[in-house]
Length: 348
Ligand code: ADP
Ligand code: MG
Image 1 (cartoon, rainbow, N blue to C red):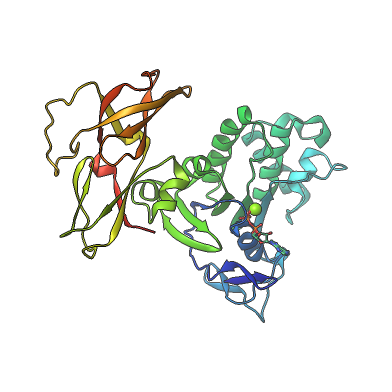
Image 2: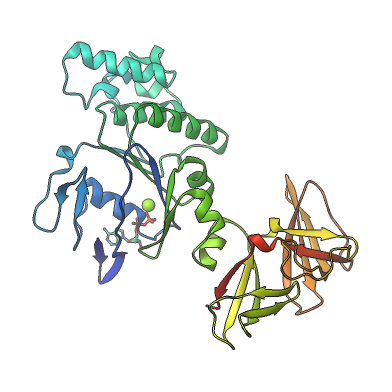
């Protein structure tokens, strides 16, 4: 699909399929085109080109268009609004076309399911933000939509509530067997919720895969950096190898003389007080140790972040250490990296 505003391709040739009964997260930084993509699927925004299918049926191209209310798509947006003049039960039953008794039964079932059955006859303004959120979820799920679209549904909640509500939401979505496309700009949220992640950037899907694969087999440096702090060492390829402070790295398929970047996360750097008996074996997972001098060290809560200036190359590298480890600036220590956690990319 393509959607442009003022000649700007906000959604630029986006094409993907999602599996029924699973939670797929569309993840990317603010402004990359996530909401626009979702709104086109919902039918409240028209694409400039491309087609959308639901269960193999065309619901929208540039000529034919099933109206939003006939798509059997459930919506839950960040600024979800309950109907203030209806009771909580009536809100949940709103989209149901079954008989009165069945409507009430389904509403009660879902409200019980989210722990709010006793609020059936209350009005929304009696509920807290988190409770209203759960009612909105029940309302969206009540008609058993073929697809649930959720746009940053947790971003209005305070941090303390959010993890609990995410987990509850996920449980309910799974129980209902819902097919979900959830938009978020938070990597932690996507990792927590998703069976599958679609990583989006500047209007394009750059990678699709299970959270584990996106994290451990990222497509490029930006994809690594989206999930955590990164370290980057630059090198030049020579005979499919490159020299680094940690010994030689294999850089298969890179032309001689081309620049490469070795990218790794601070939690995959370990620190020793001496050179250790590891020896410079470039094929071992632990790699060769390299000496660095502490620039600064900060306590971050569950771990400490230590920055080093490397003797060889002069790069600044970061390492995270569980709990408290705050060596004095100027102290020389030995670093090793987990080679199986290093990614090699052609230099940008
Ligand atoms: P995201 O949800 O990833 O934060 P959006 O899809 O909301 O991103 O927006 C992507 C880009 O498209 C933004 O730069 C936004 O300003 C622009 N945009 C979205 N809707 C419109 C519109 N109706 N008119 C003009 N520009 C828009
Ligand atoms: Mg958005």
